[in-house]
Length: 96
Image 1 (tube, one colour):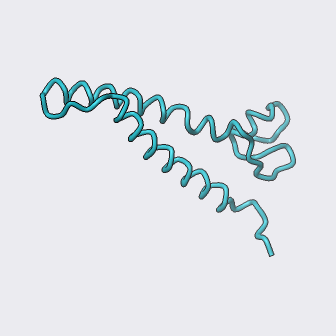
Image 2: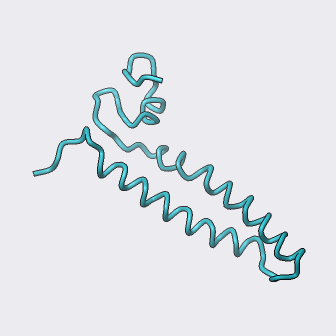
């Protein structure tokens, strides 16, 4: 997919990391798109791990506690990656 800006909406261009004028502009849905799938996967993993631990009688931990733990860890990793990606963008000018 090319991102030349002719046929793409603002949202589609943000997926490529560029806006119509060629600069890297952070739009609000970039972060939401990056967090949506990991949070859903955290929910699924919490249910599966909680069920397995309870079935094997290893621990009586709730899926909610595991979901909160996994979500905190995943969101912090995604935010660190997101901030690094936008702070190390090679096409942005270096501030003086």
